[in-house]
Length: 171
Image: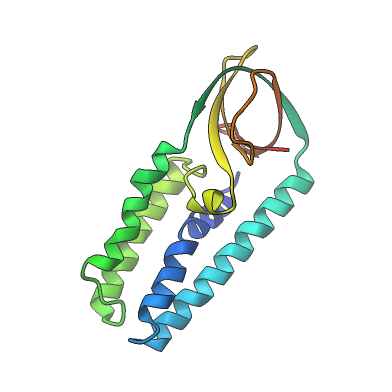
């Protein structure tokens, strides 16, 4: 998965925050509210476009399940960054806005370089769950994004989303 695709997933992971900021700033600063609303819509559209494109161009692959574990717990630590804008930042103040943008630039670089594409609240909003599966023959770990509440101990068919860390969405 390219850095651009990872950046889309990062941006979309903040779509709920952008929506919250649009609501929060509506009575205070309409420009900030409008920008946050536009960011919400754009990030969701890019997210949808990325998944539609990947599901149409990627060949399904079969994974023989050896072990299954949940990956949802990492999302809670990521959600902490959502609370920062509510502490004392005033996004209509250019210095607070610059500090906010710098913080999220650092988080973006970390997200992309750490291949943390599976950490995205939008998956949960859309009803997806995250599992880490160990492939029986190869022993490699695969993060699977699925609508199923559990993974059965047999074969799973996925579409590969991430090459270096084996992230796939169950089809």
